[in-house]
Image (cartoon, rainbow, N blue to C red):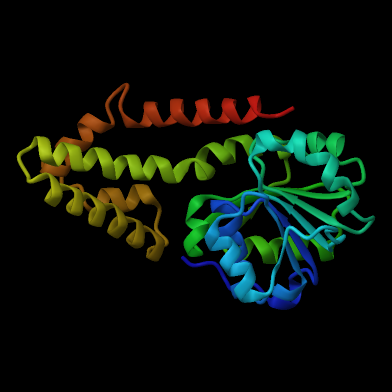
Length: 277
């Protein structure tokens, strides 16, 4: 089910985006579509792509100004490993009322405070790649200093690119990252290996790829449109003694897909934790 459209009234009046790569750029597109004032938006990315430079020129966004402003919201979207080097240049961009939103995997609120001592109100968020088409799934947690108005601003920004789940416990962010943040890659892998299996079964490789792609995207659309649990939808297409049941017996056996997915999610969770610091 699609997320409700955020109200442009809740968006921050001024915003600075640090890092305009795939995710930062996708989020920016969503914000502009939701009504963010382009003329009061600043982009800081010394390696901005030609497409981002063209967007900034066309929409009137300030790109890498000599003296960046202090904005109502400062969004950190560079690579997590770049925080250490970028932090000294960001300190002057944070005022007493600036909301800092970080989508840096593994970087805790405590990490951010250590490197950005002026930051009070901090939202730590983890979007995923479908944000690029407005269908992202984002998890977020707010520090105690985030006021209701600022949380509404963060929610409006994050909801402009998909659904938002707010957590009360920051300790769950790494698990969320492992499920929804990394999750699109798991789904793409499913389409990839289904195509390979189809080709191995004798289908032309290009046909197998098209069938796998359409099947995965169609099943995802059905899952989105139908409020019933995924397990019940699975049962709907599994006739006792039929071909699907035979295949699922292989996928769900000991050491099969459920066990592998738990192992994969745990590995991603642990890696997210290792990125902290």
